[in-house]
Image (cartoon, rainbow, N blue to C red; front, side, top):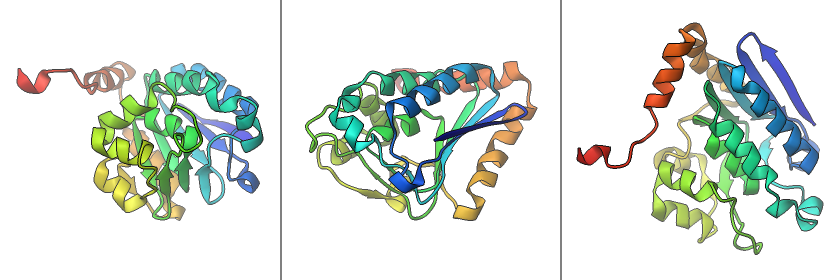
Length: 210
């Protein structure tokens, strides 16, 4: 239910459970985490999905059985955030629930116009995964993060672009080609230079006041 491929230095993971809105089981999450940990050697990683939804989050049956609070979500998002290469979440559709963490952990997000974004964790009686709120705040600020996490609001692709939650809206037929175009220069560059530039892009507290 997760398809993996490698095209030279570009590694691609595709969530392929469209009949269940690409909802994620524990087995799927473990395979994604293993892939991302192995992908520390990749120059670029693209994460996407098949169908009209990127991922609805946790499989409902497994969520009720404990998946909603499993540490596997944090292991996966941590592995993505630790990638030295450029990571892109190519959102073929809606990003919801616990799946938000893997999108937030990528270096950038591109989305189709019909994508929506919501994280109804509070309504379901759970806390978000520990790193998700901080990553969301870094992208869109505390008030808009509360709008999603506490207000339970569903954000459109246009709103997500305006907020900074996504970086570009792309026609569905151009989604993967756009992602590959973005990573092409990184893959062609010196690994040391590309990795150092990525490290330099990490915000430093207080830098604006120096």
